[in-house]
Length: 92
Image (cartoon, rainbow, N blue to C red; front, top):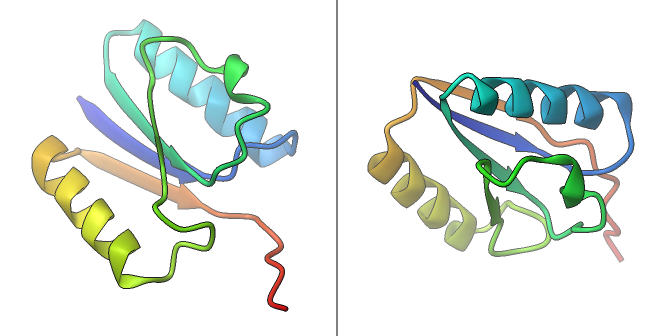
């Protein structure tokens, strides 16, 4: 099965939960893709078999982000898509 997860990689409990879930699914032979913002410090918690992608923009609300995501979904055709973006954006 193919899975796409969108979440902010940090040290929150939600992020650790998604990272554990991604690792377990990957160990069971599933194709797991993670889309995250450009926070790359904690990426070492994911296994090498999990594919990582960054949003084109820091705040994924622009047309380029939509185009990136729609192309990825068309090429992968995931069975499950889960999203949780918990990030405090600087609007200034």
